[in-house]
Amino acid sequence: MHPAVVGHRVTIDTLNAATGGADVVEDDDSDSPVEAFEQNIWQRPSSRPLPTDGSVELCFEIPYARVLPPAVSADGSGGAPSSGKKYVAYDVSVRKDSAEPDPNPTSIQRRYTHFLKLYDGLRKEHYQLLQGVPFPKKVLVGNFSGELIGERSVAFESFLDYIVSVPSLRDSEHFLEFLQGDELRKACQLVDERRNEFAVPILENTFRVLNKIFLDKSKCVLLLLCRLVAACTTSPIPHPLAEQWAELALRRYEHVCDTDLLVLYIPLLQTCLHLWWQRGRDRSLLEERLGEMGKKGIKVKGGPTLTQALHTLDPRAETT
Image (cartoon, rainbow, N blue to C red; front, side):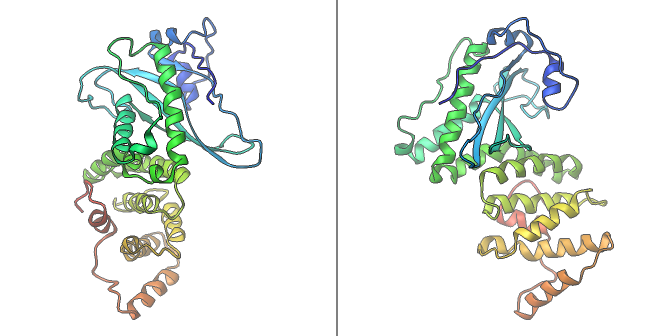
């Protein structure tokens, strides 16, 4: 059961503070969510109760939303929405809380149309599971009122909580597209344009989102992790965190049995081998692993790069 929505008016400085920017500036003139629209920001304090039974609970929360003009995308990267109209961007926080709040929450920003597409897609494929699940209807007027934003935020939170509680919904392509689709397309475009330094932060945040929701060795998590390693290592100068992500990918790949994912293992090893050489690290363990595979008749040289193998397995924008 979600608590009643209480929003309040905030300034840009206050929102920046909440997201790592300037010092907090409280504005206590009003606690009415309607006034949030005057500043184009709706915000409410975190109110999800923490588990008291020692468990770890995955939860979604929308602590704030912003009304954005057509020329600004929800992730701040620019590009006018197809409707050419201003819209509300909901900040969806993904947390795994225990007795203490998640120390490393992550978030994605989504519009009403993202939630509607997710709902419609799931309803077509899993009609029985979506019966009785409420979803906010479109409205012709009052789209940007604090009351409506608050009501939709609570409904969206409940909707996402329900999805992750039902395995067939959680593991659906519709939910995965909702979680990573926009970011993955943007990151792949940036990699294709050789702007890897801008793609890496997008992929890092997307990986953290997926890693909170799915198992460590699930296909979507490992695919995203390998894509992150590729983005970190295909620039002339590897990203500062390239080794960290590469080491994590190697650990995650131990005992992986998914045949599709195994086609990435040799390109991953070759990528790490080159990275270790660049950084002056001992490469003997990686060479030993590749040697063992070669003895089994597996081609370990002259194969596709990690980016090429990823594109074959999960075609995106990259061409190299």
